[in-house]
Length: 128
Image (cartoon, rainbow, N blue to C red; front, side, top):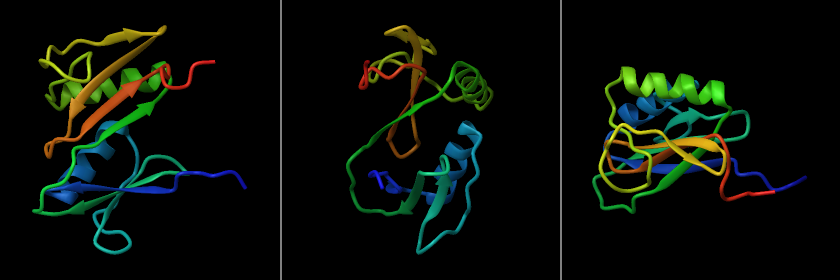
């Protein structure tokens, strides 16, 4: 069997709200309660993001989701409909701009607790 990432714990201030928001934007299933104290987001058949709630300080994460163009357009439409600010670069002002990089499109937005979400159509981390 090859190595597969199964799940990640994502710290948040409000696990239910954070899980619901991400699942709604990505158009994937989620649950208010999962195994243990988590609110899971089922990103795909292989990966679950388990949102955990904490008041303690935690490092801000950067999570990138690679999708096809049709899915990109659908997720971006949901981001816009939700009134969430986004940008074309990892940092900087929220200019509601879509970036282009290596022949693909990408956007970044922040989860209310600070995590960076990235949506891209072409991986710059895994070039052929």
